[in-house]
Length: 286
Image 1 (cartoon, rainbow, N blue to C red):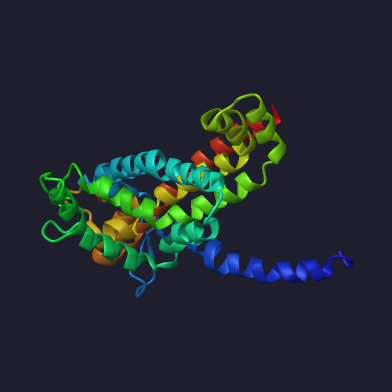
Image 2: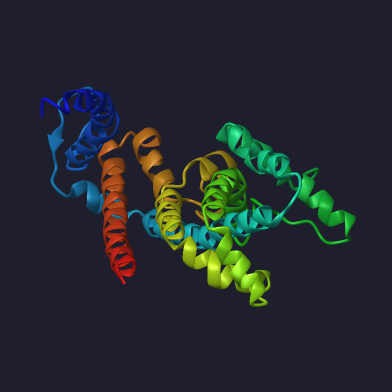
């Protein structure tokens, strides 16, 4: 203990930050989910009434279905696209630094700015996307006003905003693969797709599994896109669990209901993370 006292001293700052900004809010959320509390009067314990209230809400089922659909679409689009882009960048011989900057540029924008930029892109009148459709003689779309396209539109925004981070992480993993493996594959006549299948994917399996977990956890908590773009509409087509939490806490003043939703989401993510980590550990031990 005395020998490692300096190391523990450096750790204390991080532990204090985690305790104050992460662990305490989690404990406070668990307590609030069983209380009726307006933060003015003393909290009143109500047992599971908050959970019964939010489960009876017609938007509750829609929120979970939309959240699951958003996560699924984000995995199809937002999980695959950065990896493919990283493979392409890794194969290029020139302008790598410039292209990395271009890919990472959306991450530098504040999320609210990026979302509002896409709000203009999706404008049914003079929006960029409908102008592009008109240029190729296709009918315009009601991107955010149709129940069939609103959720997909949010996934596109989320993918564009987070594309740079995932791409650079994958690119760093790709550059750590020994070049001898690719040279051997090329000598055996393997093309790009075979090299990706037999060399790239097996060598980056760990980072792919970690990114999959992070992707699911992040997309299950999606909030800013429905909040700024659609307000949960049309017809609750884009209301998510995190957005419904916000509505309960700050629109309805029901902090207990919002905390109950937050606790449900935390439990779902905890169960998923536990199962996923166990499966990935067993896979790594093989």
